[in-house]
Length: 386
Length: 132
Image (tube, rainbow over the protein chains, first blue to last red):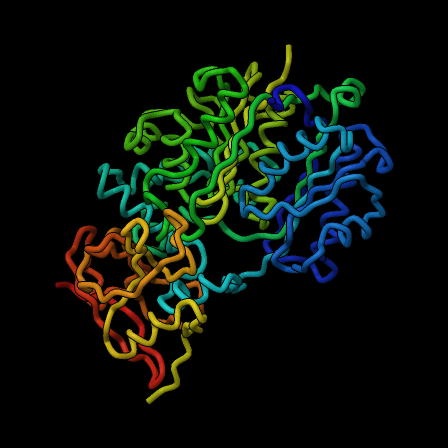
């Protein structure tokens, strides 16, 4: 059993993130807008969509959610679900869509996420064990967990803040060529990152994503539908998923993440090697996330991630193109659509629609989706067939 | 005495003995009779061997800082001043989320620590740690 080549991404939609939502903005409205964009991009009609995967927006959550969101868009679908694995949800949707298609349940799946964020929004954890054993000590939100990962990584491997900052700097160079990125007006230097305000030691402000408002969607379709798509179909070649904790305190390790198993599973299914990738799109809620991901996904040795990002050019014109859209650090994090930005960028690059930041001859790309505090992990290998 | 505005634990039937012990300034954890491992946070079944014979045992209260951060800007408005959030690895094995009651600049990874019970309200005691 394998999902290799069983379905392809054929259309994308992505909104330019807004720093503040407008007065008429709603999460459901954003979903409809970006879904329309993705369906048109695929060259399909809304009536062709017969599968629906959606992410729950923090700004308008609810149980029994998918039918409501589908109803707003007037969809009639043979498969519908919420994917609730944090920031890994968008990447997780892609293989779930392919699996549903391969199983014959449906043939064209709309995967959509959108959310509204306002500065200063506070979102307490909703699961009882986290309210009981984390919140009283101030382990609230994602910042603290990633900071503790970074401190432990520095302790075990000698990783430096300047190495972490390099991730934000190179990704900003990429964002300068992305009209959709939130921060695309001026380059960033390592000194500026290290000079920005310390938020949670050792992470500075410019090492942390900014919450914004936006949305993104991808259409995943059967080989039959993919044949008549407007753009070159981008095939799912391999996928893997793994989680071994929710709260980082109870993870087996702070510095070795579940990414290893997710990535190994994806590459094994794909039958290609890490070195075959023309670019990577690792989830980057923080700079440290990228360093740990590159190690655990097998692009460098454990503990060498800091040195790796220091020694390689992570820009679209570099020797190791990484998050060519700017990453969420420069794109902004419109809720789960931040996670989708890695998927849409990989598809865009493989379709040859990268514009000024196009990686020449891109045929294979790796996406990593990351949920919670290095918790849920999804690896995807995507391919454009020549 | 100003009002305590930070989140407080709401014990569940499963975790009640942990918080009751903390109230008496005792650190008690569940130990699995099946596999012998100590576990945290409290469960109804052992997360390692899935056995259901869990017994409450007093533990040493000693451990090391596995990692930490100084939170200078918190995601909750009640946390106004910088605080040291940490993961402490207890001698008995389990890790706990906690605070280190010490000057932030004195905390480092691997620092030996000992339990420090903080009676934050008349009804609530949080399990914190301080340098040993």
